[in-house]
Length: 75
Figure (cartoon, rainbow, N blue to C red):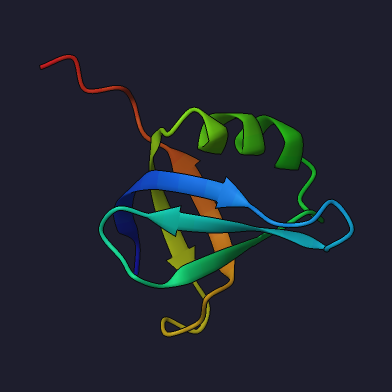
């Protein structure tokens, strides 16, 4: 199940295997793991505060399993 969320903050330590991502619509702190081949590109998008569609596996996990950047809303 996907959730559409707006990035509020990205942080964490360079030494960690993940970055912490906070969204405006959720109190949870999510983890986005550095093992993805497109990690650097997606991290840049996260830092821009883009709206994204995420899924976690299992659904109640805090680890982002998949993420897609949504098109900017021009309206």
